[in-house]
Image (tube, rainbow, N blue to C red; front, side, top):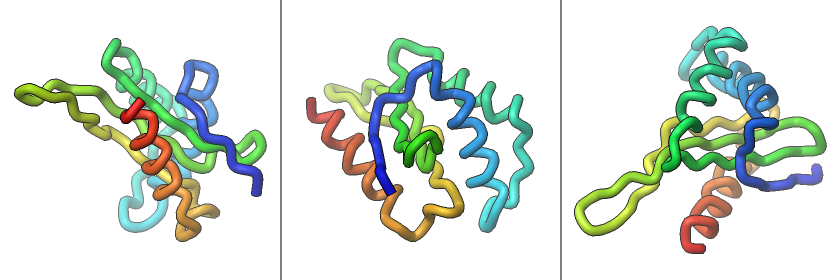
Length: 109
C-alpha cells in the first residue's frame, strides 16, 4: 500500500465519485448513488471559494476523500465537512483517521 495524500482537484472528481458510490453502497447507508449523482454532488460542494477537498490515493485508486467548506462562526473559521468516505476495501485500516490528521495539519497551515 503506497498512500498519497493531496488536495482534491478537478481532475480527481471522476475517481472520487467512483469511490463515493462504493463507500455509501454498503452498511449502514445502503445508498445507490449513480456516477452522475456522486460526481455532481462532489462538484457542487467543491464549487465555492470556501470549498476544501482532500483525497488519499493508493496508486491510481482513490481510497478516501473528504470535501467541505470553510465557514465563519462568530470570530473564527470552521471546516464543515459535507462528505467523508473510505473505500470499502480500505475500511478499518485507519485510512479515515489518516485523512482527518492530514486535513487538520493543512488547516493549521
